Image (cartoon, rainbow, N blue to C red):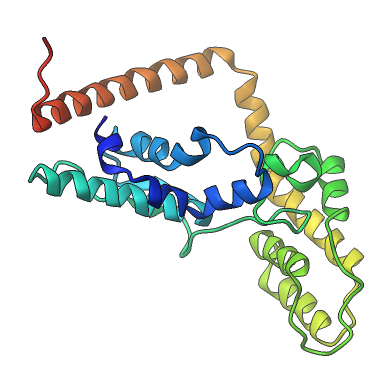
Length: 241
């Protein structure tokens, strides 16, 4: 309820993700697309979170969440909501590029454009080998087009610095072979994904453990949410009759 009072249509229409979805599907513009940032904000503020695990593409949504928290605090002269900040284990927020060269990696762009952590080695390799490229550079030290920059971004996520430098040098002197680069990315990606894939399989097979985690998580979330709703109602003067 308090988000409905603090979110403005104009600012929601300016959200980068909303404008991108409208561009991609102009005949399917609905309230769900427009209000997504407020739903994300509600998930964060409902538990008064201070550290939020987000990627670079969600940074604007997190900034809006901070705006909503600050507006509420100013409106009701309180410091109830803390200012949430982005959190990850690196030095900067990441955005994993799509294999088809079209923006971020997302299941919305289809199976071929997306790497899943459960992909088997043969599937993973096939997807990466099918990643979009061009005919190659014709001038030394030329600017990389988006689809090639995407390949290098993927490589930076899983490959050693010296490997990245090797292919970057090859691109700059026009000797790069994209097939070799993709094979390298596929091998390094498999090394990265394999232990995660096996852990997912292990956990997925333990239904008793998963049920316990879901139950405990639900109980903790419900307790946290109920307290926030109760506190907010008291702050804004809402009384149940």
